[in-house]
Length: 379
Ligand code: TXA
Ligand code: MG
Image: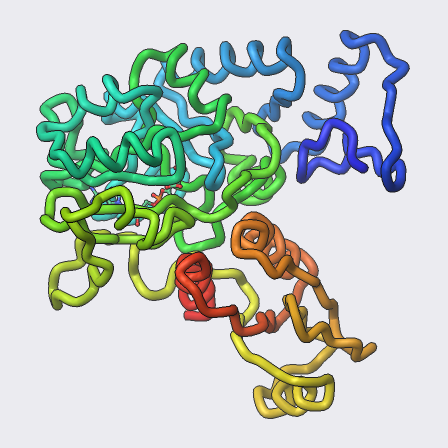
């Protein structure tokens, strides 16, 4: 088992074997100092604050709120992926997000709120569909696109008439927003076009040198980005699939219905972030199926992929060839798969793979968002 399971920071993960309990012998204060010391040594420049005790959690909330009030950009955990947050009501702070990420200025940013009242304050309309969806899925991994209210500037919406709003369920994100009293604009905390981070170490690798603070809130529990739903259309339109999938949305919306094909109208790119190639690892990613090692080997040969430079991510046909760069067994369950996926892609890149071969996914609505992310990663 892992003690103090702050994924991504092996300095405080103690592998003590199966089913064993760990009792720490250090007094709490010394233990905390030790962790802070360890994590800051590993940082690329940013302060990295842990949150796994009440005292550390509260201290990190104070520090994050202090920086956010001062107009800084900080990386915070959410249940989907880590976010790069700034005061949504401060256009200069929001502009810094674009700068740090290298994000194109035409791509709008989601605002994060800590309750329904805050959500409603920053939208100009709250249709029945929004109410039903919020009641069913908030706090959680669902973003609602609605007409923006006057307080939301062009810097957040990229000049558009709408704003994406999400009430995240991660307790740290909720606590910081409550402490600040303003909504937080936050895209995923990765350089534009690369894979979203699902732990603090992922953020540190790519953005640690550009920001002052990364709060370590553990491994993101959902693991892929929120479902984005345009509620200005009737019926609402899915702009980005997520783990809250079409069937669940339909169940909540009832007779209002749902449109799942945002791309169907040519010229109307309603979610500019949904460009085809997005969320990409450095390695070339291919999705394929095989029945046995011989078939996989011949398919790699046909691709021109050297096995030693190939990482395989599989859930049912697990290869046993010894010449592969690596094989990773990923859960055969959509929720667990989503939680693990980005960390696997980050790991493949860190190991210098030239090829990532991912086994073809099962069918079913719970796999749609994962299939979407893999298609984009494959470009
Ligand atoms: O789970 C998530 O949504 C994470 C966490 C941090 O909350 N955030 C996230 O943000 O994935 P980002 O910026 O990486 O992706 C947001 C997507 C983009 O595709 C963007 O174009 C779209 O949502 N979006 C944001 N505001 C929009 C709006 N007003 N209208 C249409 N699409 C919007
Ligand atoms: Mg993103």
